[in-house]
Amino acid sequence: MKPSIKEIVVVEGKTDTIKLQSLFDVDTIETNGSYLSRETIVLIQKAANNRGVILFLDPDGPGEAIRRKLENNLITYKQAFINKADITDKKKIGVAEADSRTIVNAFQNLVTFHKPKDSIGWDEYLQHDWNKAKRKIVADYFKISESTNKRLFKRLNMMGIDNKTLKQIISSYKVH
Image (cartoon, rainbow, N blue to C red; front, top):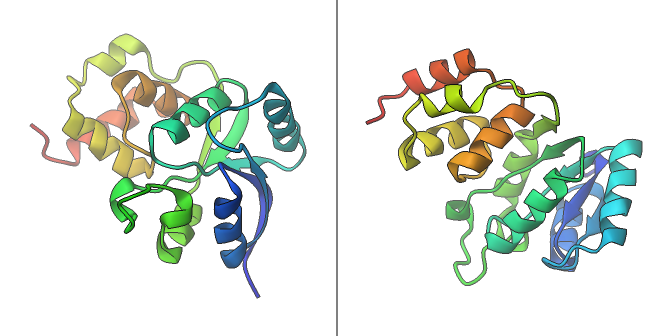
């Protein structure tokens, strides 16, 4: 018997749905590529309010664009992330190309996001003297995709991470 996922999982296309349904008892909403219609956004918002949603999108440019658009239109949701490096098919980097172990791992490490008031201010965030290596450490720690400073700042706030916690995470690694 396959594990069941109670939330509705938002994916980009039919091949993603097929892949997930081979591993889980799951319902999905397909965005049908990077164009996200107002109708689809409203459907995802209703799903988030009724059953909850998990965003599980490709770790590429179009997938991140869909993720950003949905982040701006949802209040509470979960996200599952896969790392580009974990995808064996280098021609296309997507959910459908990830192996089963990688997908199961992504769902075992779901991250919940809320749109609260800021838990860390921009000035506090900038005091960490950010570089790509530090952003990668934080992204890996929380099992989220690597991103720009602005995007990481926004995600940390949506997860409710405060400056003290962020300092502890960064100081536990030797970063230069």
